[in-house]
Length: 303
Image 1 (tube, rainbow, N blue to C red):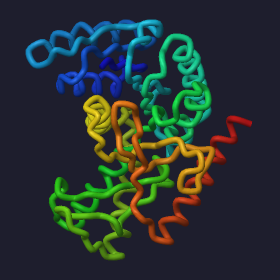
Image 2 (cartoon, one colour):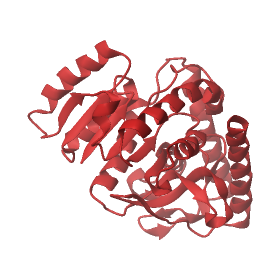
Image 3 (cartoon, helix red, strand yellow):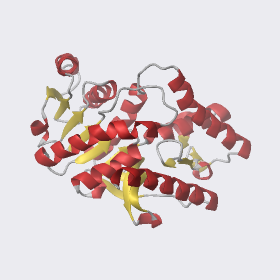
Image 4 (cartoon, rainbow, N blue to C red):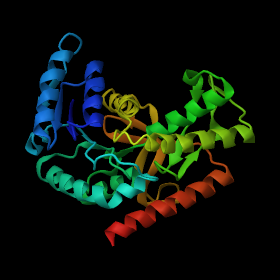
Protein backbone atom coordinates (compact mmCIF):
# COMPACT_ATOMS: atom_id res chain seq x y z
CA UNK A 1 0.00 0.00 0.00
CA UNK A 2 0.99 3.63 -0.52
CA UNK A 3 0.53 6.66 1.73
CA UNK A 4 0.28 10.28 0.63
CA UNK A 5 0.85 13.08 3.15
CA UNK A 6 -0.51 16.54 2.37
CA UNK A 7 1.53 18.83 4.58
CA UNK A 8 4.57 16.58 4.39
CA UNK A 9 7.08 19.37 5.06
CA UNK A 10 5.50 20.26 8.40
CA UNK A 11 6.37 18.82 11.80
CA UNK A 12 3.38 16.49 12.01
CA UNK A 13 3.50 15.30 8.42
CA UNK A 14 7.24 14.62 8.34
CA UNK A 15 7.38 13.04 11.80
CA UNK A 16 4.52 10.71 10.93
CA UNK A 17 6.21 9.79 7.66
CA UNK A 18 9.38 8.79 9.50
CA UNK A 19 7.62 6.76 12.21
CA UNK A 20 5.46 4.93 9.66
CA UNK A 21 8.52 4.45 7.45
CA UNK A 22 10.39 2.75 10.29
CA UNK A 23 7.57 0.22 10.59
CA UNK A 24 8.31 -1.03 7.04
CA UNK A 25 4.63 -1.69 6.27
CA UNK A 26 4.23 0.50 3.17
CA UNK A 27 5.67 0.36 -0.32
CA UNK A 28 5.94 4.15 -0.60
CA UNK A 29 5.23 7.37 1.28
CA UNK A 30 4.63 10.40 -0.95
CA UNK A 31 5.08 13.85 0.55
CA UNK A 32 3.33 16.96 -0.77
CA UNK A 33 3.72 20.53 0.52
CA UNK A 34 3.90 24.13 -0.66
CA UNK A 35 7.26 24.52 1.10
CA UNK A 36 9.37 22.97 -1.65
CA UNK A 37 12.73 23.50 0.02
CA UNK A 38 11.92 21.84 3.32
CA UNK A 39 9.97 19.13 1.52
CA UNK A 40 12.95 18.32 -0.68
CA UNK A 41 15.28 18.14 2.32
CA UNK A 42 12.93 15.70 4.09
CA UNK A 43 12.76 13.46 1.03
CA UNK A 44 16.53 13.38 0.61
CA UNK A 45 17.32 12.93 4.31
CA UNK A 46 14.53 10.55 5.28
CA UNK A 47 15.01 8.42 2.20
CA UNK A 48 18.58 7.68 3.23
CA UNK A 49 17.77 7.32 6.93
CA UNK A 50 15.31 4.51 6.21
CA UNK A 51 17.62 2.53 3.94
CA UNK A 52 19.20 0.34 6.69
CA UNK A 53 15.90 -0.43 8.42
CA UNK A 54 13.04 -0.31 5.93
CA UNK A 55 12.05 -0.95 2.32
CA UNK A 56 9.61 1.97 2.30
CA UNK A 57 10.45 4.62 -0.29
CA UNK A 58 10.10 8.33 0.48
CA UNK A 59 9.25 10.49 -2.53
CA UNK A 60 8.07 13.97 -3.42
CA UNK A 61 4.71 14.30 -5.18
CA UNK A 62 2.19 16.66 -6.72
CA UNK A 63 -1.54 16.03 -6.36
CA UNK A 64 -1.56 14.08 -9.63
CA UNK A 65 1.01 11.74 -8.11
CA UNK A 66 -1.37 10.78 -5.30
CA UNK A 67 -3.65 8.91 -7.70
CA UNK A 68 -2.37 5.50 -6.59
CA UNK A 69 -2.24 6.20 -2.85
CA UNK A 70 -4.41 3.95 -0.70
CA UNK A 71 -4.30 6.31 2.29
CA UNK A 72 -4.14 10.12 2.31
CA UNK A 73 -3.08 11.89 5.51
CA UNK A 74 -4.02 15.57 5.70
CA UNK A 75 -1.85 17.52 8.13
CA UNK A 76 -1.89 20.87 6.30
CA UNK A 77 -2.93 23.72 8.56
CA UNK A 78 -2.40 27.34 9.49
CA UNK A 79 0.76 27.87 11.58
CA UNK A 80 0.34 27.03 15.25
CA UNK A 81 -0.48 29.93 17.55
CA UNK A 82 -1.69 30.40 21.12
CA UNK A 83 -5.43 29.59 21.11
CA UNK A 84 -7.82 28.76 23.93
CA UNK A 85 -9.78 26.32 21.78
CA UNK A 86 -9.03 24.39 18.56
CA UNK A 87 -12.21 25.80 17.02
CA UNK A 88 -10.40 29.13 16.63
CA UNK A 89 -8.69 27.60 13.58
CA UNK A 90 -12.04 27.01 11.83
CA UNK A 91 -12.29 29.88 9.36
CA UNK A 92 -8.59 30.02 8.52
CA UNK A 93 -8.19 26.30 7.92
CA UNK A 94 -11.37 26.17 5.84
CA UNK A 95 -9.48 28.00 3.08
CA UNK A 96 -6.88 25.21 3.18
CA UNK A 97 -9.23 22.22 3.32
CA UNK A 98 -11.49 23.19 0.41
CA UNK A 99 -8.71 23.36 -2.24
CA UNK A 100 -7.28 20.08 -0.92
CA UNK A 101 -10.64 18.39 -1.44
CA UNK A 102 -10.93 19.82 -4.94
CA UNK A 103 -7.53 18.48 -5.90
CA UNK A 104 -8.17 15.06 -4.38
CA UNK A 105 -11.45 14.76 -6.24
CA UNK A 106 -9.67 15.54 -9.50
CA UNK A 107 -6.65 13.29 -9.08
CA UNK A 108 -7.28 10.58 -6.53
CA UNK A 109 -9.33 7.43 -6.38
CA UNK A 110 -11.52 6.81 -3.33
CA UNK A 111 -8.70 6.52 -0.81
CA UNK A 112 -8.92 6.36 2.97
CA UNK A 113 -8.58 9.89 4.33
CA UNK A 114 -7.17 10.70 7.77
CA UNK A 115 -7.84 14.32 8.71
CA UNK A 116 -5.56 16.03 11.25
CA UNK A 117 -6.59 19.64 10.56
CA UNK A 118 -8.38 21.40 13.44
CA UNK A 119 -11.19 21.51 14.30
CA UNK A 120 -10.95 17.88 13.23
CA UNK A 121 -14.57 16.77 13.72
CA UNK A 122 -15.89 19.67 11.65
CA UNK A 123 -13.38 19.27 8.83
CA UNK A 124 -13.77 15.51 8.73
CA UNK A 125 -17.44 16.04 7.91
CA UNK A 126 -16.68 18.82 5.42
CA UNK A 127 -14.17 16.57 3.62
CA UNK A 128 -16.80 13.84 3.33
CA UNK A 129 -19.37 16.30 1.95
CA UNK A 130 -16.85 17.75 -0.52
CA UNK A 131 -15.60 14.38 -1.80
CA UNK A 132 -18.80 12.30 -1.57
CA UNK A 133 -16.72 9.18 -0.93
CA UNK A 134 -17.62 6.17 1.20
CA UNK A 135 -18.08 7.59 4.70
CA UNK A 136 -16.22 4.66 6.25
CA UNK A 137 -13.07 5.84 4.47
CA UNK A 138 -13.13 9.33 6.04
CA UNK A 139 -11.46 9.40 9.47
CA UNK A 140 -10.57 12.19 11.86
CA UNK A 141 -7.60 11.87 14.21
CA UNK A 142 -8.54 12.07 17.91
CA UNK A 143 -6.48 9.34 19.58
CA UNK A 144 -4.43 11.83 21.62
CA UNK A 145 -7.44 12.49 23.87
CA UNK A 146 -7.56 8.82 24.84
CA UNK A 147 -3.80 8.73 25.43
CA UNK A 148 -4.06 11.71 27.77
CA UNK A 149 -7.01 10.20 29.64
CA UNK A 150 -4.95 7.07 30.35
CA UNK A 151 -1.91 9.24 31.17
CA UNK A 152 -3.96 11.20 33.73
CA UNK A 153 -5.37 8.08 35.40
CA UNK A 154 -1.90 6.52 35.53
CA UNK A 155 -0.52 9.65 37.19
CA UNK A 156 -3.34 9.90 39.72
CA UNK A 157 -3.57 6.22 40.65
CA UNK A 158 0.04 5.14 40.19
CA UNK A 159 -1.04 2.35 37.85
CA UNK A 160 0.91 1.21 34.79
CA UNK A 161 -0.17 3.23 31.71
CA UNK A 162 0.38 0.23 29.41
CA UNK A 163 -2.14 -1.88 31.35
CA UNK A 164 -4.89 0.74 31.23
CA UNK A 165 -7.63 0.48 28.62
CA UNK A 166 -10.29 3.09 27.94
CA UNK A 167 -11.56 5.72 25.52
CA UNK A 168 -12.36 9.38 25.06
CA UNK A 169 -15.18 9.95 22.58
CA UNK A 170 -17.07 12.97 21.26
CA UNK A 171 -15.17 16.08 20.18
CA UNK A 172 -11.42 16.38 19.77
CA UNK A 173 -11.45 19.36 22.09
CA UNK A 174 -13.47 20.70 25.00
CA UNK A 175 -16.44 18.46 24.15
CA UNK A 176 -14.59 15.19 24.72
CA UNK A 177 -16.47 12.63 26.82
CA UNK A 178 -14.22 10.61 29.12
CA UNK A 179 -15.52 7.08 29.62
CA UNK A 180 -14.28 6.58 33.18
CA UNK A 181 -16.89 3.96 34.08
CA UNK A 182 -15.85 1.67 31.22
CA UNK A 183 -12.09 1.76 31.87
CA UNK A 184 -10.17 -1.44 32.56
CA UNK A 185 -6.82 -2.31 34.10
CA UNK A 186 -5.03 -5.44 33.01
CA UNK A 187 -8.27 -6.59 31.38
CA UNK A 188 -10.42 -6.11 34.49
CA UNK A 189 -12.83 -3.26 35.36
CA UNK A 190 -11.18 -0.54 37.43
CA UNK A 191 -12.97 1.53 40.04
CA UNK A 192 -12.26 5.25 39.62
CA UNK A 193 -13.57 7.47 42.42
CA UNK A 194 -15.43 10.71 41.82
CA UNK A 195 -12.45 12.61 43.22
CA UNK A 196 -10.13 10.87 40.76
CA UNK A 197 -12.50 11.63 37.87
CA UNK A 198 -12.44 15.33 38.75
CA UNK A 199 -8.66 15.30 39.06
CA UNK A 200 -8.21 13.46 35.74
CA UNK A 201 -10.62 15.79 33.95
CA UNK A 202 -8.78 18.83 35.27
CA UNK A 203 -5.37 17.35 34.47
CA UNK A 204 -6.30 16.64 30.83
CA UNK A 205 -8.10 19.97 30.41
CA UNK A 206 -5.13 21.90 31.83
CA UNK A 207 -2.66 20.06 29.60
CA UNK A 208 -3.77 21.83 26.41
CA UNK A 209 -3.84 25.18 28.19
CA UNK A 210 -0.31 24.74 29.56
CA UNK A 211 0.99 23.58 26.18
CA UNK A 212 -0.54 26.62 24.49
CA UNK A 213 0.94 28.97 27.09
CA UNK A 214 4.42 27.89 26.00
CA UNK A 215 3.67 29.66 22.71
CA UNK A 216 6.18 27.38 20.99
CA UNK A 217 4.40 27.67 17.61
CA UNK A 218 4.76 23.88 17.54
CA UNK A 219 2.10 21.19 17.36
CA UNK A 220 2.38 17.95 19.36
CA UNK A 221 4.42 16.29 16.63
CA UNK A 222 5.83 13.25 18.38
CA UNK A 223 2.71 12.25 20.34
CA UNK A 224 0.43 12.74 17.35
CA UNK A 225 2.77 11.00 14.92
CA UNK A 226 3.03 7.90 17.12
CA UNK A 227 -0.75 7.69 17.36
CA UNK A 228 -1.38 8.40 13.67
CA UNK A 229 1.10 5.65 12.81
CA UNK A 230 -0.93 3.29 15.00
CA UNK A 231 -4.04 4.08 12.94
CA UNK A 232 -2.22 3.65 9.64
CA UNK A 233 -0.77 0.32 10.76
CA UNK A 234 -4.25 -0.92 11.75
CA UNK A 235 -5.52 -0.05 8.27
CA UNK A 236 -2.58 -1.52 6.36
CA UNK A 237 -2.59 -4.79 8.32
CA UNK A 238 -6.41 -5.05 8.27
CA UNK A 239 -6.17 -5.79 11.99
CA UNK A 240 -9.67 -4.86 13.13
CA UNK A 241 -8.16 -3.23 16.23
CA UNK A 242 -10.47 -0.76 17.97
CA UNK A 243 -9.18 2.84 17.99
CA UNK A 244 -11.16 6.01 18.72
CA UNK A 245 -11.45 8.15 15.57
CA UNK A 246 -13.82 10.86 14.42
CA UNK A 247 -16.22 9.08 12.09
CA UNK A 248 -19.11 10.22 9.90
CA UNK A 249 -22.49 9.55 11.52
CA UNK A 250 -25.63 9.35 9.37
CA UNK A 251 -28.15 8.04 11.88
CA UNK A 252 -25.91 5.67 13.85
CA UNK A 253 -26.58 5.84 17.61
CA UNK A 254 -29.22 8.49 16.90
CA UNK A 255 -26.73 11.03 15.52
CA UNK A 256 -26.82 12.48 12.02
CA UNK A 257 -25.14 15.16 9.93
CA UNK A 258 -21.80 15.29 11.73
CA UNK A 259 -18.52 13.55 12.48
CA UNK A 260 -17.65 12.67 16.06
CA UNK A 261 -15.13 10.57 17.96
CA UNK A 262 -16.15 6.95 18.46
CA UNK A 263 -14.27 3.70 19.11
CA UNK A 264 -14.12 2.07 15.68
CA UNK A 265 -12.73 -1.19 14.35
CA UNK A 266 -10.23 -0.39 11.58
CA UNK A 267 -9.20 -2.36 8.51
CA UNK A 268 -8.07 -2.05 4.90
CA UNK A 269 -11.30 -0.29 3.88
CA UNK A 270 -11.40 2.10 6.82
CA UNK A 271 -14.07 1.77 9.48
CA UNK A 272 -15.37 -1.78 9.82
CA UNK A 273 -17.75 -1.02 12.67
CA UNK A 274 -18.44 1.39 15.51
CA UNK A 275 -17.71 -0.41 18.78
CA UNK A 276 -19.28 1.83 21.40
CA UNK A 277 -19.57 0.52 24.96
CA UNK A 278 -22.85 0.99 26.77
CA UNK A 279 -23.02 4.56 28.02
CA UNK A 280 -24.30 5.85 31.33
CA UNK A 281 -27.15 8.36 31.26
CA UNK A 282 -24.71 11.15 32.15
CA UNK A 283 -22.29 10.16 29.38
CA UNK A 284 -25.10 10.02 26.81
CA UNK A 285 -26.27 13.50 27.80
CA UNK A 286 -22.72 14.83 27.51
CA UNK A 287 -22.39 13.21 24.08
CA UNK A 288 -25.72 14.69 22.97
CA UNK A 289 -24.49 18.17 23.94
CA UNK A 290 -21.21 17.63 22.12
CA UNK A 291 -23.00 16.43 18.99
CA UNK A 292 -25.19 19.52 19.02
CA UNK A 293 -22.19 21.84 19.33
CA UNK A 294 -20.32 20.13 16.48
CA UNK A 295 -23.39 20.36 14.24
CA UNK A 296 -23.70 24.06 15.00
CA UNK A 297 -20.10 24.61 13.90
CA UNK A 298 -20.64 22.59 10.73
CA UNK A 299 -23.81 24.50 9.89
CA UNK A 300 -22.01 27.82 10.48
CA UNK A 301 -19.78 27.20 7.47
CA UNK A 302 -22.12 25.16 5.27
CA UNK A 303 -25.11 27.53 5.36
